[in-house]
Image (tube, rainbow, N blue to C red; front, side):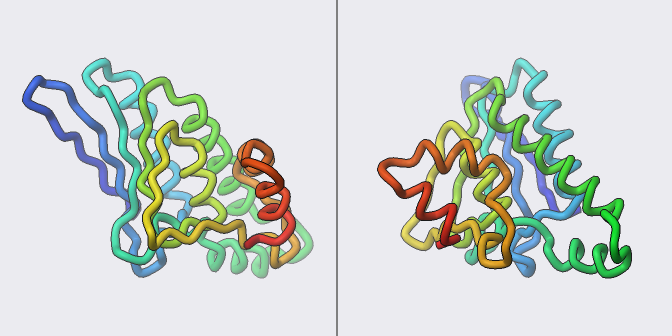
Length: 174
């Protein structure tokens, strides 16, 4: 699964939901079970009046989230040549629903984007109302370098960056 969820209670009784992507050896890359658990937990916290805020973070020093589990998706494509593999279709549908949930989340959502924040990690980070990056943060949409378009809401958030920065990132994957 690789998602750790906890609730911390403040002195006044207010509770904060904390979801931690917990696959540091894989740079917290998202797999389908992680997406499903995170979506379920976020839905429950959204409906819990005692939860006043949600924090999304990654474990380990190297990455918040390096995107999707590309190895599993590539293997699924190799196992189903000439067709859309069921895992791939399910993965992207679930990932995009999660990104939409985050973009429309009814409570304050804080995302701590340390280290690598790539592809799907950018989708999570950019959906948060409060986005924190650190001196070690490295933000990118690397799918551009293998011929894919920037997804996970990138057409929305890249177009809102100042100047031509979004165009530069979308075309170069830098």
